[in-house]
Length: 265
Image 1 (tube, one colour):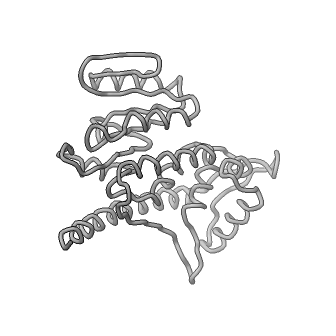
Image 2: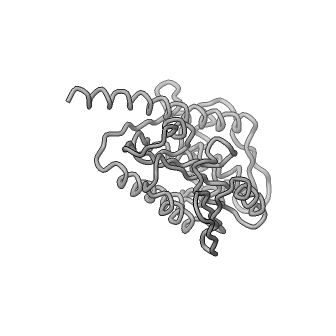
Image 3: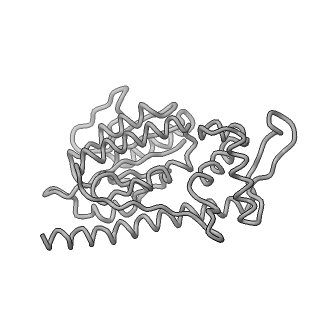
């Protein structure tokens, strides 16, 4: 089961709406809310005020559901999650720890967001490309609600050799899909590209990297299944770590720049 954590810098930033919209897109999901006040439970919303009870619910859901979408700011940094989404808005009721929570998030919507990082955060998850596109549209709408027309910075990371692209987000997503699906054909379908296109991208990357990314097995459609080499796994993990770090550092630097520009006006 994939765990999604949704938190926010204050109340009224749209956490419940976002959680509901994400849940509607995912396959076999369950959602929960960890909040304050009177406990209320229903079929559509599992509401908890006690952290331990919420954690027990998450553990009990792992065998039954593919995804758990948890609106639970207080769990950020206290439990391993597959993706952490933080709704960030600078206002008079902003949490004192909001900057720290935003730094720990994989996806930030609102102030200091980096849209180029959204797809990178979704890439390691086993989600069809059509669903990922729906999620990106949901993120964009929520982001626009929080910021209006505020400035933001965009960050892209790719590996070059001799002026040619060797490795980037597209091939990283494709390899992650192969790892999940066990087949290049199934991975290409999930990514919304042809088998020929996918195979060509992998061959070009292997030639420029000068090592194998996948090992093919005989039999079955399109030559059977495929699995990643150990170097491919190391490359993917390192790439996503570098990208997340670059996004966070660029966000911090841009925040300082934006504040300095505001002070000059």
